[in-house]
Each structure stands twice: as structure tokens, then as C-alpha cells.
Image (cartoon, rainbow, N blue to C red; front, side, top):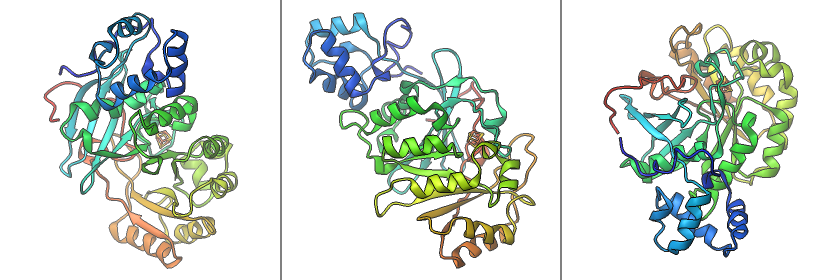
Length: 360
Ligand code: SF4
């Protein structure tokens, strides 16, 4: 597939402007003896017009373009394949310049798409219920590799212009790749960047407490916490990170996470038969979250190859939700979207079928 944005990608020796925030590009351009305002022009070309090379930036003088291309590059990702689930969810497989693969998931809404982006190749967190956590961790993604999941889909698919919401939750733990994720958020929200409001961005974490505190100071995005247990014993079993940052510290960080008045935290809770889905668990969960302005997404466990768990029966899932509602929480059962193409929560691996026809 010939894509816009792939002509500058192979040059590895020059700084990549897509790894820089507006401020950094301004500094880079000032160092070349040019006016700072040109940084905004360059960013608009990269993120709002999908410019593939400096030659495409036609309102910038030829001399300056030549100078830029001698000293910097513009990267891209290769879209290898896009699969479509029976329910309309799409999974995009990207190839990185070093040959690694990552996946993003597009979830259809009424008049828009939500894009779930990855921040690492694999994940080190080892959550027991998650396929990504069982795959080898390779490396952190660069800021450009995070934002290019959005940019490449925006300019190379018919529905890309309708991507309105971003969820930072695909492969990897975003707060483990803190600096690059924060830089990506700055580029996504910049007026001259992807220009997506921070109200429409949600970052999901397994609970790296110090980084949650930092994020609250550095950005103003929505926070989702992958909780999955009402007590430390169960959470230690499901999520090794809990041994380092137990529930008391996690809930305290959530209570202190700064949020505008009308926003709420999201807690994700994967329901696993015989592990965390009893009515007693639901009552404990209601007690644990007391005092938090939040909503709960209940996600019946999505099976994957060799998974050791199963989802509870539908009646048990509904009974669990009803306990939370009785305790005045907003609790929604999230239908596993894209399960038939391994695109649902906890199913991403970057191993998607890498050959064959795609169905953009
Ligand atoms: S649930 Fe998230 S943090 Fe846990 S292993 Fe999977 S990708 Fe990593």
C-alpha cells in the first residue's frame, strides 16, 4: 500500500520533527536562524495536511525547505493491514521502521470513531488476563510512533477524518513510557498539531501511582484505571503492579487526580468467572470506590489463544452491575468489541495476520 507520509521515514540519522513538540520545533528552527512562526506552519503541514515530505509544504520558501530536509526528517508508519470485525470494529496493524509491529483499534460511534493507540511494543506489566502482557516486551514507542497511528489513519483511510476520540490504552502501559506519551499528548492536543481536545483523550493505566500524580500536574486528560479487583489479594494475583502500588495508594492517587467539575474517572473492571465477579466482590468494590467521582466499565473477560480464564454467565454479569447501580454508581457492561479479530480489550499482540488483503 503506497501511503502518504512514507517517503522520509528511512533516514535514521536526522532528528525527526514528528518526535518534537511545537516548542522544540520552534527551538530547532530558531537555531537555523529562521522565524519561530514557521514551526506552526510545519506542524500544520505534518498533522493537518498529512505532508509526506518537506517538498509538499508549498507555502514555505524553497530555500528553507531544502535546508530543513538536509537537517531533519519526517517519519511515518506503514499500515500493513486493517481487519474489520463483524461488529464494525477495525484493527490496524502497523510496521515500525525497525521491523516491529504494533496494533491500534478503531471503535465506531454514531458519527465518529474512537481510536485506541499503543505506546509500547509489548508490555512489561504482566497482567494475568491480558494477551499483550504475555507477549515479549520489545521497546517503548517514540512520540512519533504514537501520534502516527492517528496521522496515518487520518490521511489514508476514508473514515480517518472522523477519528474524534483517542484512548491511550492499546499495547503497553502508557505511564511506563511517560515522557514519550506526554510528548505525544502535547502534539495531539496542539492547535497546530492533531488539534484534538484533551477532553476527548483518555489515558488508561494499570496503576503506576507516582506517574498518575505526575500526569495530573503535566496534562489535563481523562484518566481510566484498570482496576479488576476489590481487594489486594485478588489484585496481586491478577496484576503484579499491585504488589508495588497496592490499592490504598492507588485509590489515594485517584482521589487526588485533578479533574474539571463535570469529568469523572473511569474504572475498568474485567469480569472473570470464579476470580473477581461474585456479588461479594461487587459490594467490596462499591465500598472501595466510595467518595470517588467515577464510572465503571464492566468488561466480560475476552478470551484469546491459551487464556486460562472465562467470562461469567450473562446473568452473573448483570447481577454484578446491579449491585453497583444500587450503590449509586454508573456501571456499564461493555460488550467485547472486535473479539472475532482479537481487537477487544486485552487481546492485542502485534501479531495480527501480517499478510493478505486488507479491507480498509
Ligand atoms: S492490561 Fe495493560 S498494563 Fe496490563 S499487561 Fe495488558 S497492556 Fe500491559
